[in-house]
Length: 311
Image 1 (cartoon, rainbow, N blue to C red):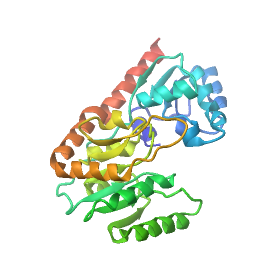
Image 2: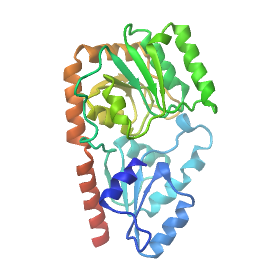
Image 3: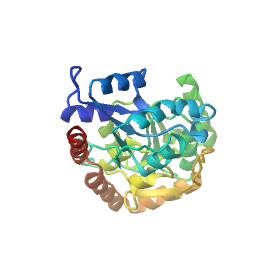
């Protein structure tokens, strides 16, 4: 949803006589096909931001039904923005190739707001952030921490792998206690977009354990704050982090089931980054500034939209 806020600064939303309808597949309104049909009837063009599709390993049974809205919108789009090459490849495979012009534009970050800390925190503080929909994301981070004595792990964001958050918290604390690392773990909870820069600035390394993540915005936000990333080298992550922004842990390419990263490999990657932290931190920041700043992202959107309405 932050993308809509970014876009609204340059292209203000209007209810009267709009000429562009911009939709994001992960945040579609109710009855998107009806909205598109009415918009096109009145001469508006559809720009579709395709940021992931359902597939068997992630979604489970019923993935075909979940993809139907995206399939219909891809057929009607006048332009498609994919958030990564992985998004394009997976959408082609599970929702169908689009016939409209398209480009790849990863999620952006405001590098004037997301900046490194003026004074880094003491010790080695590792951050696991985002919406934790699957238990393996937290479990592998805790198991990696066992191999990192003296480090601290902050788990920030919503825990939703059980319907009740209290049950999620109990499972996290129970495993941390069983592993003997409870005193190294902080459960931060949900955080606002405004608080995100301060959260990143109070850590040294971002640990991202999700498998096949298409294009997580929090990763480019962390890099903009000078946090190198240790991650599952799957999905769109290698495209975001590159060779300079952190260290990836190799994993199979698979759409049939998820492959959690190996905790020992994650710990080894953290150790490698920590040994050269100033260099990795500087390179992560530079990569975010040069490749993911929001201003060129908005400029490219303006080029796309002007091209559409003038053709």
